[in-house]
Length: 257
Image 1: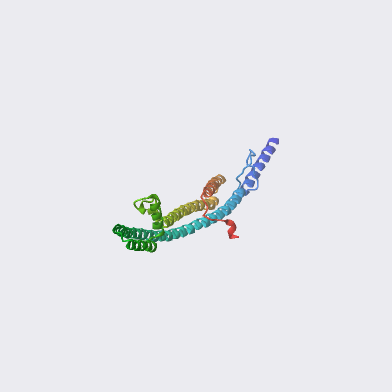
Image 2: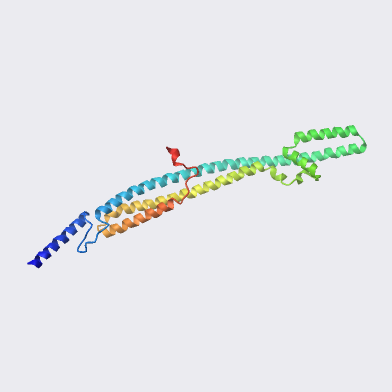
């Protein structure tokens, strides 16, 4: 009789364990008495929590990705505008260079005529030519040519265009604008890459949402636990990867409040 009573107690205990496990209200199972972490109620709670977290992170990634897209469009537009201005300045610099070159050729003619007048002893004519020369230089020579002429005189050079870097001076503004245009284009390309990367993160988050959504389809708790763990791992890895991506240029969360 004692053995039958013991067996009945064991059977009642096992039945209670099975019932409690199916309802998710206890953490013990079977004869072993070991605690279970993934009970039905806990899995449902974890799914609800991570669904909310994933939804928030998806919204964040979408927003930051759109900001990168906006910066990309802005930088591309500015880059194109600066490139147009740079090309215009380059053409202007080239025209100034050719104008100074032609002016210098005319100046050489004046100097030659002045030397002839001096050689002939016609001082008045030489002074008149010298005055014409000065007026011509003042009216037709650019600031760069004036600087180069001063350098030529100080260094006793054959030509003002022998001054180091004189040619580049005509295109300084153009080169600055074109360099700025290239920098903005590079920023726009980087924004494009960052925006695409955020889109990839969103794809992973969508996969996580799908996996969390199908957890309840599986009837056995171990299967649910496996799918849940995979979804959580994917969520963590995607989030770590997302925070390695640079934020949009000039981004400040405080500016939105």
